[in-house]
Length: 296
Figure 1: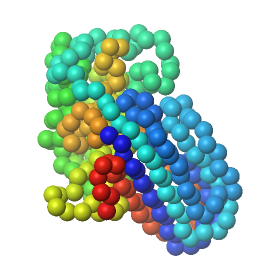
Figure 2 (figure 1 turned 90 degrees about the vertical axis):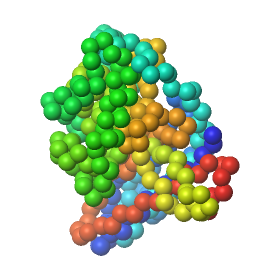
Figure 3 (figure 1 turned 45 degrees about the vertical axis):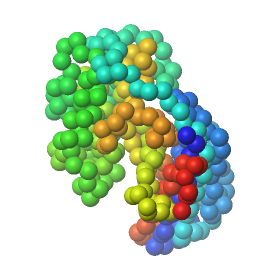
Figure 4 (figure 1 turned 45 degrees about the horizontal axis):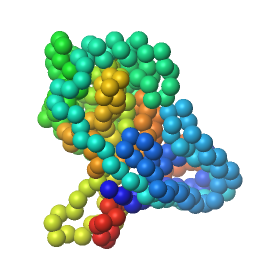
């Protein structure tokens, strides 16, 4: 499947911004069943400097400095991505979760795709005993890491309510867990915390999810959204497997990966600082369109 992606972010400021620095993480990731065919990012106003580089986790980033006074800042990313992943393994495949935990600890590699960076607490994913206990119910002794994680994913989808008003981007994990409500970021963070609490390597994945308009209805421009899910390292043979607790599904060709890190803080599409006073308004439009489907 080949997708055309468009991600438009617009900031409107109550007062002029005279200086800003920001980092963009909007180029989809190559590998894992994905090939980026095209990718470009347009920014307005034109930045004073623009530095493109690849960070430790393999994310293609763009660092910008803007020193022209402005009341509106727009970032528009376009990409074409080919996605073709193999079917997921059968249920309960792979080694036990205890074996996966021990193998991850024993691996000497500190490379960006190795499990070592994803076993321990991170800034937005503390190891909360209550979340670990919640996850433990899916991991009987000797059960496969993959099988237990699939059950945990299903339980989160069943026990948690999707509610965009229940949390914000900065809501602590413990609060979202207590509410049993939130958005995909919260569901992913909770699942990662539970898996890491058991010693299993789990990463935060950001990207996009193909959505389908109702039968007979046209696709609405800008109506899609960014998405987040989990990748679990299931041992050397199975490697990393994507699990989407928001939708209770194993990741296949409907998911497009942009970035993978320890938590949202590693992969935020745009972050930075501005020198100004007053309020700002943020709007985001996302389109995820298969090339064989009429766009609008």
